Length: 151
Length: 75
View 1 (tube, each protein chain N blue to C red):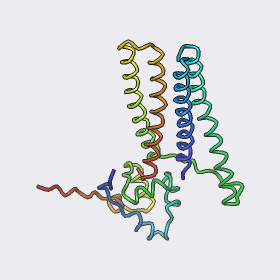
View 2: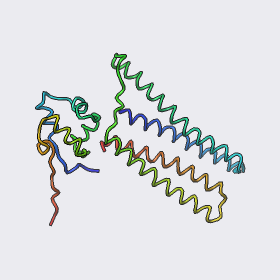
View 3: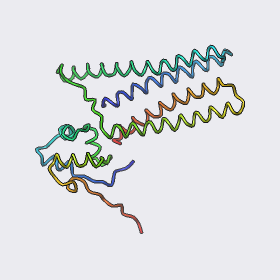
View 4: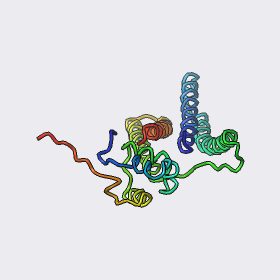
């Protein structure tokens, strides 16, 4: 598995955990009848904070663990991680981003339509965040698929 | 995405250049080993610049490394 694939796996893991946490909390709030402003704002804050901090910390952790594993395997302490990127990596990233943008756009449209049809703004913003997280996961899956297949 | 219609001779040329490894070729061209693997298998068509750089490594004209196989269109 290349360095880029490991980074995508890290991002995919973070966003899958965030999605599960977000859906679980939404379900709990809905069950308890707490689907109201202060609780939902806290949940949005946690999700956005987790997305930023989780991705950064897990990427750093992946880098460190990869380096340790490669040093153990090669027995060479001066061994450097091959994190070279080229045109194929850029194209794969571009295709993944395209999927992410497409899903985010559809999600935003659906979120705005719910508002237009009389739902409260809380629903609209919750759908916006949900579509953003799902879009990121779909983009990462597409990137991984292209790496596994060659292109 | 299926196989590209751009075919190549990279495997044969590597063999004739002292069994050059994919990693060595990748380092000389300035791409990753995975990209060389994808090009060799015909799964990825490189940019013109990378194609020229590969040809330069083998000191061969471009058409000796890559060629285009036209699709057999049923008439």
